Amino acid sequence: MRISPKELSAACTILFANILFAPAPASAADHPSPCQSDIARAVGEQLAKAPGGTFIPPDVVAYDDGGEVITFRPPSCGPARRDTEHDCDEDGIPGNAVCLYDRRAFEGSRQAVKVTGTRKLNGTITIMSIKNDRPFVFFVKKSKYDQGTCFLSMEGYGDAGDVSGQHWVNAHPNLRECH
Image 1 (cartoon, rainbow, N blue to C red):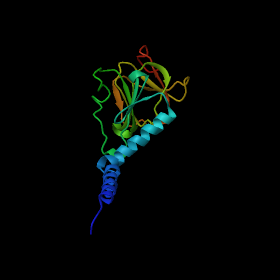
Image 2: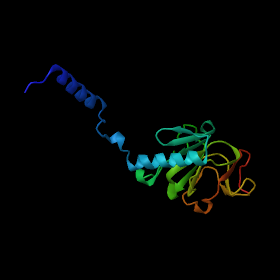
Image 3: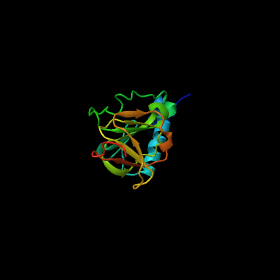
């Protein structure tokens, strides 16, 4: 069988086009793990409910130039128990944050609040445990004007589920004791 140069050219063009534009073989990067998918979903929900945050890959959303930082750790990412002695001051500034966790015993996603004053939390996580790594008390409140629940300075509370639905905080440096 004889193939003309014209037919050979057409066949080569088709073959080259199929090689050039064929879909790339699937890789692990094309199929995110359940952990990566759950983090992406949590970050998306967070930014939809509280816009204005900055996503810092792979699992952090920050507000107020780092004054409030949420690190997502869904159950699909494996064990999440944290070292509460050092977890809240991981930025190298001891006594700088209050950390709110979405599971008991300092597990799961963490919301670190570093700014002072009375403010509404941007985080959408449910508060189940708290570590107050500041030298002053920290109040979690239902509303801006609510008296709130007080958490002493430099203390950890592994089961704080009774404040799970509260979304306001009062963290004034002049508040040194609970009233």
